[in-house]
Length: 390
Image 1 (cartoon, rainbow, N blue to C red):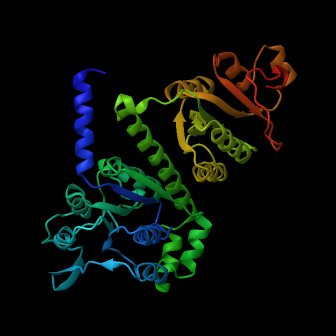
Image 2: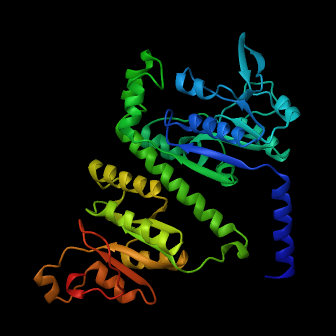
């Protein structure tokens, strides 16, 4: 690194130290628990002696969320008269004047009523961060500007409140708030998300199972994308990690996906390394091609990977082996975990064909390939498994 690079790196460090930090609870839809978790963290910080205030929280009439907001200091909202209607917004000047260590500010993509300092709430949050105030906020994935067309195509919904992707990229920490779609639908039917008169319409539209599955997958992909961008843009001295990370290869309907993921998690723990769960999407498995059952299974698999602590990636490639090895090189992977394939028919063997795993082992020079049987206890690891069994 040159002296100029070191100077710029130190300047970035100085600037970051003078600004507040931004933490975002990211979810795939209303009701998954983002606000509740934000408030729960506020309580934990308060118990640790941190000066925490609620800049703004939206309970939407949800009793659980309202109870969670109790016993936290709340900055009174600013009232704005607009077209004869009284609207309440966060009082930015009051929060700046109070200058807490941490401010809880809900719904980052919210559009403010006319007459305030900023049109969007995320700009209010940027003012707080620039003033040295740490902010914890919430966001649904469909509010990202770059996903507008995707969400409209997949769900038939036009999202009016949006924010630039750069806001999420600038966050110091992003927490994925996940809930199984059936559990979210159950919360909706129990009246824990919307009033009773809105439940039926919500279930028939936004809260359809297919919509929730799509949004879940978008959230996982967005998190992976953000991680990738930050890794690439980090100063070189921050990228020096040992080239021995763990990679678990997933298929769309692999019978042992859960076992592979749990093994990958244990292996990464023993090695004290990061680990990645990677699904290679071939043209034959594009979202528009695979059936709904397969897509749902894949989303559940990727969600489990995220819950187990993996960094989840979906990579597109025509050749699965080459794409796996490209990812391994890019992310300094030293261990590749993959399921044992079914034996090839005799006639394919006679033609000299090899299984995907055999091809991977032949090409994976310097890498440890762990081949696991479906439905069996995952114990062994080898760079040279029996070629007769893949």
